[in-house]
Amino acid sequence: MHLFIQGSPGIGKTTLVKELVKKKPSLRGFYTEEIREKGKRLGFKVKTISGEEAVFAHINFSTPFKVSRYKVDIDIFNRVVIKELNECLSQNCEYLVIDEIGKMELFSEKFKQILWQILQKKKTISTLPLKGESPFLEKVRSLPSVSLLQLTKENYSQILNYAQIFLNTVPLEKIRKWEEKAKKVGLNERILIENASYELASLIKKLNLGNKGVVIAGRGNNGADVLSCARKLLGKGYQIEIVVLNYNRAGEEVKFQVSILEKVKKIHFVDTEEDLRILKSVLK
Image (cartoon, rainbow, N blue to C red; front, side):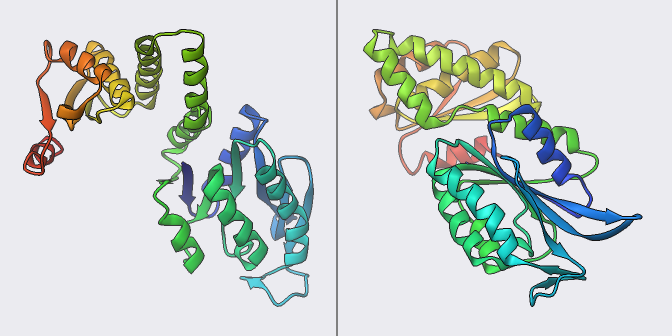
């Protein structure tokens, strides 16, 4: 999963990234800062979270790579950034922060290559410029694992909250390892489902997305997780529509959750293509 934050210059993207780094110092990655003298912007420096920094764009540089008045030194950028990204790729780094994937950074082919590797293996929070397109940016934005948020002055606090929740979310691989350990010591699957759904319901409440929603559950234990979460949300006054897919092939835990929910809420079962019209009407 990747969280991309898009916004115009000066809107607060870098400020938001710095706030995240303060609250979660175990992050890796980099951000860029303006270089100003007597109120005039002269260039940009790149700072890695591990502590390295260098000026990589300046009005007085002499290079063929240019954005507006600023000449970009790719060698300097690569020397600082590629090392940081390589370390994140090779080490046990869960999340990476990148500020930003913009025109200056994309002059570097090495940056694009390693970033693409990272996007396949790690979780990232990245900032993007509001304007400017490139084939690479289009490819990155089209990844199915990308969530794109628009940052404005009005929603800064809300986007910061989303990003903090994103960073505090436990990766699926780690949850699976915990489940395996729990089973080995004899913890019941139903207890694990109740604990997972409690955390999920608490997270949904923190997001302040309103009190209406649709829960779509599959036939496995992940489906049981979200059905148990639906129970808890209904108990907190949420208006939840519930859709269960392939119930005729559902596992024991899904059937158990359905048996409880049916007593308090109508459930929409989708077992055939014809039943998909139900899902369409629920989502209207």
